[in-house]
Image 1 (cartoon, one colour):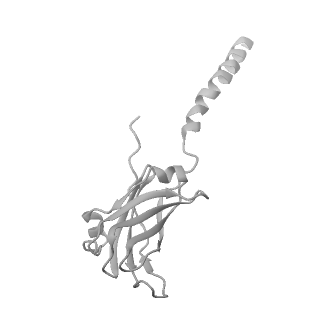
Image 2 (cartoon, rainbow, N blue to C red):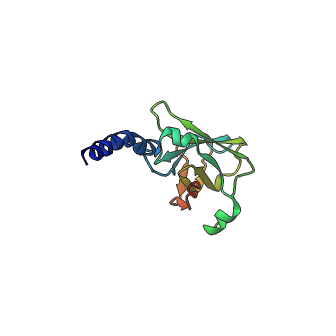
Image 3 (cartoon, rainbow, N blue to C red):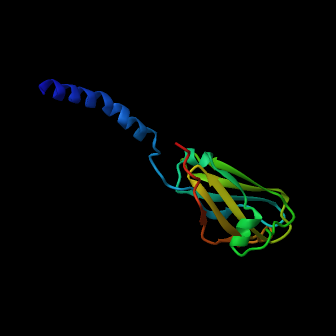
Length: 165
């Protein structure tokens, strides 16, 4: 009987690291990526330059995200029509500031000639998918008022299914 207890104890000691190994591969933070506030740094008649805060994720998680205009079915679920982009193409690029805060840099292909932009953005990351509606009102160059932006709360979309075992 004493031999069995000793053998069991040795087996448990040997297996403990192997059993704990999968825990090391689990993400330390299960936070989902979110789309935050939009900050506009340009005016009417200039190429659009804006930043959208990425919230709830580390810089490494944010860099894995894909940001794009939401597809038509996502806009329809929100009760919205086609985007109003003022005749320009928008580009979205995930950036990480020196302090580690991540954001989406939004730029346009040319000067924005319409004072009103309206679009739905989609962020897809390993932690899930989210869509958010943004409205931007641009002031003419030289006015003292800052550009105004508004956004509806983000709408989470179903998280990706876990990989098969």
